[in-house]
Image (cartoon, rainbow, N blue to C red):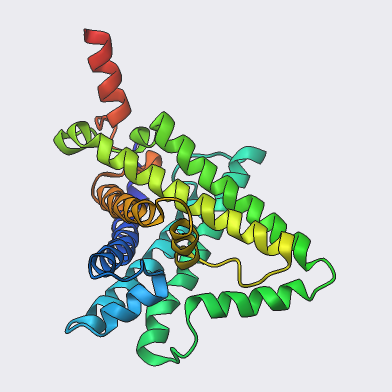
Length: 281
């Protein structure tokens, strides 16, 4: 049964997922346009900086910031009230802690567009990451800490890839015409996100292994690493298209995500609809 006292959380959830969708739309869209123009794919900071220079750049950056802050608030609310019913056992508490951490990370990302609007933009995403990593590497156990961060990040990438392979995300999406007939695009988007996070985690691991703070970074470094491989430009283009589909996946979550504790009892998930169709054959 839906908890009517918490229905106010639904608009926050929708705004949060819409914000994430907009970020990936900007990064993948700007990168694909740059590649088409003969340039290189952009990381988050560079893509947002490109948007800032557009006629409606200020409005777009403010919307991105608000969306990411909304996602942070949503994840904190989700974890505190256990809206996805993970429970209070060790596994459930771990999942809820992960939700809270994810929310805080996206809240920090929400500061990027505000820095572009009101702060200094002298140092890019990669140089800032290298600066902080070099500081961390100077600590007595800094390489171990970075190695653990790499393992956690790669674990998140594997989680997304498993989510795409098993299509477990269908349990959290409403069954309707779009989700039934366009599921393959959503699956590719989730897989692309998994691959990008896995590469980012791998590069963080290289930082710990080589004591090289310049090895790690965000999507900018992931795109750069892919570009150095065989058929690199093709791989980068494919990744950008995949992340564009992940933006679609986020938008679909904004519109059709099922929150277990707030779910209408008569609402059917995509997984349930497909199971019923299979059983009726």
